[in-house]
Image: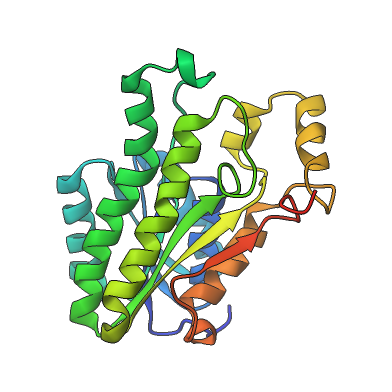
Length: 253
């Protein structure tokens, strides 16, 4: 363990797998006390176990972050458990229907918005409320290159939600900068997560995705987690309202 985040309390949504889990573990390894949130208890308990193996302190709390009452309860649990909130990492998401825009029904489009944008808004809203009581903090919303630097056919709902996340985060950064709260988007390239593998089930598809990146590979989730730790720490104290891109050069190719 390191001590970069000693004394800090972090809340990570989507912490049962992928970038969310890797970030929860990295924050704990840096000394933060972490609440790991997600819909399913089993994967969250695995995150808790993995952190404990390395001496980190992580507790699990199940929540559906598209529901405001769940988010309120989640933040309240964090404050009751650890007394404060300093870092919020919003990595929750899901997989919904896709296809060309003219075939996408409005209900499916709204599922993408709820899963990636409304959930991040609700999480950010209540995290900021807690951070105001704690004297400041860092909100980190996990974004993607899809729709931001590259358009990918069949992903209009996902792209709309994730690019909307940038406008949301920059506005929050402007609103609360004077009160010691920073907000940034961490834009990921392709990463080897369960969702990535569900979207690219064959070796050929994963190889093709890797070739989209200048580095000719996709990321391990831990590589994104390292960037999140930077945004959570005092080392990024002058960084707010930015889009930090860790995309393996996908925007260059």
